[in-house]
Image 1 (cartoon, rainbow, N blue to C red):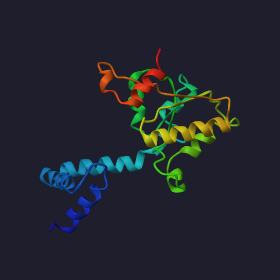
Image 2: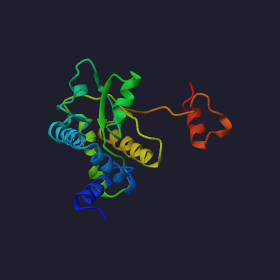
Image 3: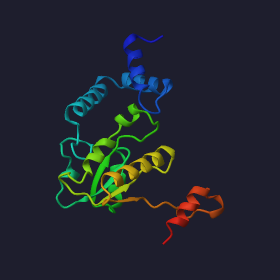
Image 4: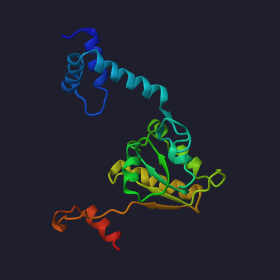
Length: 200
């Protein structure tokens, strides 16, 4: 129905999360209507992303340099590492101003138990980082993963293996409970149990 170049771009955009056929079509025709200037801006931004973005050799976050700014910052507490699933979780935690330590970005969670899924995320790199012989001594790991089934599976796996490799490391999780303004009668059992367990 469309020309090959339009179809190719639609197919490429459909690979992005939450982008279906219709959304991809809208994006393509938006770019075509806007003209070459906007397309060139997008191409330049993508070229710059591919050229300049690196994986931090310490925390595996994406950055323009390696080590990244956080890993290079000598004012931060590098003995405390906050483990997150995705790079987008780092700015979310940074905005709170409550964590002055380092990070480790897994780039995913354990959705299945197969070797391919395990190799895809940065679990081995974390376990190597917390080993007693590692250059930087780590005293606490904060597991800041989503409280869903894949997040819980990953957290339990990490907790078990971290303690096995280095029993001296303190493993903590984010406290969970009832949000402000919520009603007890509408809270699910897991949230309510967590709120009781983490009471102050």
